Image (cartoon, rainbow, N blue to C red; front, side, top):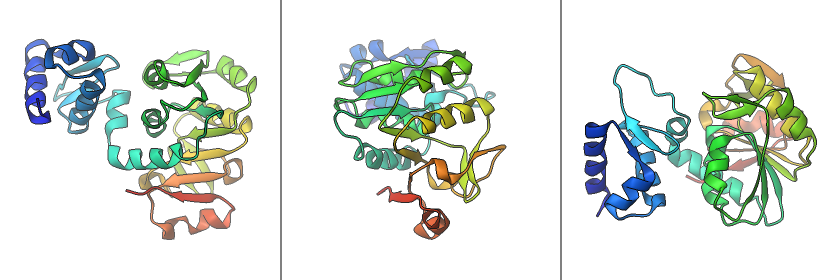
Length: 250
């Protein structure tokens, strides 16, 4: 069954029951769970449903989308290009930090066969990597339901016990003034990851470049590289500050 026919079946089921389950969907359509998950992500990107961790729910036109996976599916082509480049920097034996950013989450699909250890505060990352070759260390602490991530003092203490070879992190904005976040909780997690990693990559699409948001929590000196699709002309200031620029091929 091709995608258009599967799409029709999925929309029909959502109209009838209001939700779909990945395992049940895969069985009914005679497809793999990976294909079912990919279909739902595509439909979420098109605004036709809301993704949940186990499947999807019907779109309510009077409610703004808020699902983490819905966010991760937005601008998916660019995010995937960034993450492919990021995955090329990861080698067997690496210990890496991954935060709860929606772009960082999409790195999971490109590292599932690597023999590495991932330390993360992101529940979606844990879910995606649980049946892969990757060894996962889950950071403990206070759960942020909206972000599907763990934050707080206990989480910081957990991170400080480990040393990573590389960290792959997201930000809400980055300019020559430094790194920006919309939350002090997320800023503290990013700072802790950076302090305990040998090499720090920031994964961000062009919309985050030169963007300054609520909290300027660190300077560019805490990071080593930016992986982005942004035009090189917009990145000259970062290069002059000693940051390595890795271009994502779209």
